[in-house]
Image (cartoon, rainbow, N blue to C red; front, side, top):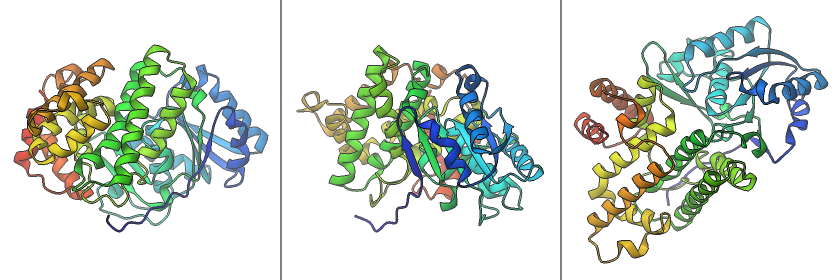
Length: 390
């Protein structure tokens, strides 16, 4: 096992009815809040009025900044930072899914530092400070509520890049599964695909077997997949929603791949250009990318693919007496079938992408490979993987 450092300073408040603690938690850390959210759904659900009541009861002044997009844009975050400065705000309360929380972190950096915001995402500048963020998660998928990363899209260039920093961990995250009961099944499936990708990336890229980490990943994957099956039958299954919400927070906060030699994120490297250029759901892009990547990498990672099939997809008997490569093909086909079963795309055309600019996607993927330290990929190899997505 490799040496590692792992930190999670975020205070998590989990359960039903927990939002009555929001005002007090905000007031401990700030008195003038930017209230960040996406579209009008939080008003229709009544969540907006609950948040506002918490602010008022705690004596917290707030300024709204709505309209966060699913692939959040730098320009909108810069506008939020200008509001922070204009109104002398000192804390950000993000109510929404990973996109809203990611943008909150971007605003937290932009409001506390002087360089153009995008410069931090392309590593042209570094940040030393960030304003505090409190998160209310409503669409669990990305772990942004419990990690130190922010992913943003440049609307002009369609580049989708990220930043990391210990001061980007939310100070407090509220995880109330009851807020997720009415998420449409389609978007729940996208979210689960995203959660699973976070678990699978380190699992498939590991250069050895790691009993502790492998076991945690395998258990989390099975729990997410089984819970989604329950939600397909009953979208308001509270226990299934609770499992998915907690799995989402744990999947990408560094714990499950800590110490895993070789762990990297090539599938995210390949997917970001898809959602950056075509504005598709991140989970939808991942269900296209992952099978193609597995097919390309199969000769090198057949052993890990077979473990996934045996321990997570429960295919042990099916894989017996087959060669490793043939058995790996069976596992990949089974994963594709499961993606189709939950109604996520496995080909570009199924996601409405009639034509892919492979040159532009490859350039962005290569840039991400360098920024993120994802080793071992040439332009030729990346093009070959994109070709398998058609």
